[in-house]
Image 1 (cartoon, one colour):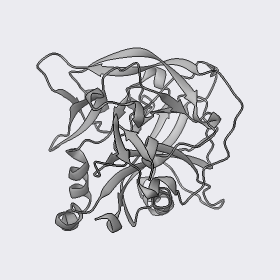
Image 2 (image 1 turned 90 degrees about the horizontal axis):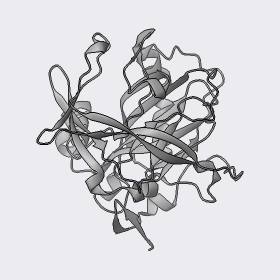
Image 3 (image 1 turned 120 degrees about the vertical axis):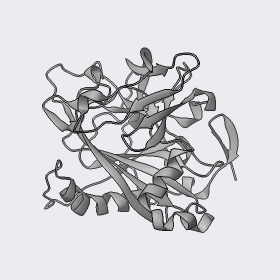
Image 4 (image 1 turned 180 degrees about the vertical axis):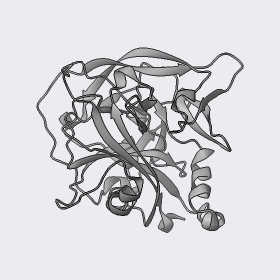
Amino acid sequence: MPALAVHGFTLPRLQSAAQPTRSSPPVNRVVCAALQSSVVYATVPEGEELFVTAYLPESPSERKTNGNYNPQTIEVENARQRDEPFSLHEHGFTLADFQLPEDLELDWKNADQVKDKYYPLALQLVKDVSGATRVHPVEHIVRKGRARTSRGQSHPEDPAVMQPSNALHVDFTTESGPLRLEWALPEEYDLLQRVPFAIVQVWRPIVGPVDESPLAFVDVKSVSPQDLTYGRLVYPDKHSSFYAMKHNPGHEFYYYKGMTTSEAAVFKCYDSRTQGTARFTPHCSFHDPTTSDAAAERYSIEFRALAFFEEEG
């Protein structure tokens, strides 16, 4: 069985990584030069631990952090130009067909409608792409805006919607992955914590194609464990954690140009398995310098789910 490098280590390949159950959209091999843009990396004052107060719709202006966020120039390649598609388990992200039913009608800002109508479709996609034996919803976030003017705060015209963030990050850590499992399924936590599981995110445009503020991913094979900076995510009554990213010129950035509403990017936020698979996928939005200033704001939804691999437990 061939090996793969994950976070700088050579590890055995998982069978599920080589056998996706849902096909990716056709690869577009029109060759274009990599884009030059910038994303934000975090630094922390010496002797301090990074913290960020959680976004709360009722107090959007109170998000605080002790981090220093520094823009760095990067090159971003169009992942559609690769001869072979990226793999969720090997590279940390992939692109999948995700055509919603034509008669589906919902208000994307109505959380109950999204849970009732969208969650079942997104859960099936997570199961198909990851090869999981069981899936369970965690949460969703609707975003609208421009990454060049925001690091994820609320939209100025609609505080219930968040803007895209250009700060490179991973949403969960070795600590908060299991914690989110406990929050989501407290009655089953003692049993499920012994089952290999991942937190998988589905990112889909609500309006497409995406020109403004596309989502970029870092191939996990270009990430060192030392690049991950632990940060506390502070809620009024509890704490979680995330990883900010230290700058590393070796990071390899990719995006899917012109994503449509019939496609979704699927990527890893966390994986409890320590060998043989991508665990943490750094990602953020970025400004595409070829985008017209007149382009509409990006409008998208991100959905997170627990994916269990019971046959490996």
